[in-house]
Length: 130
Image (cartoon, rainbow, N blue to C red):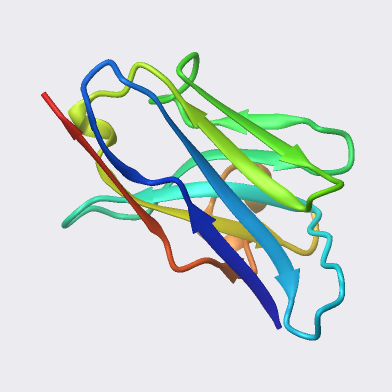
């Protein structure tokens, strides 16, 4: 079993920034290396939306259209930690943000489809006020 623990959420005014983190580990205490890791978000009454993904091997990144140019995903291999730097936040960005990991690189994972991911964190809330 894989454990993903998000942190860094909170409340911020429009135009502000937040940085989310996601620490990955295996339940046995061993190191877990995902092929692709991603960030998703889900607002009240909305479907889960792919925000950004990264291929941990080559560092290739993928973004949802609504966050391109504002959000940056990164992965620290030494710390086995995923990050999401969010700038120029607006109220539409308010949602629960989830970290996800995929054991294999698939087209679904690259396309930021939730079906392409095997493990999920519990989520961290981001609230942006106008």
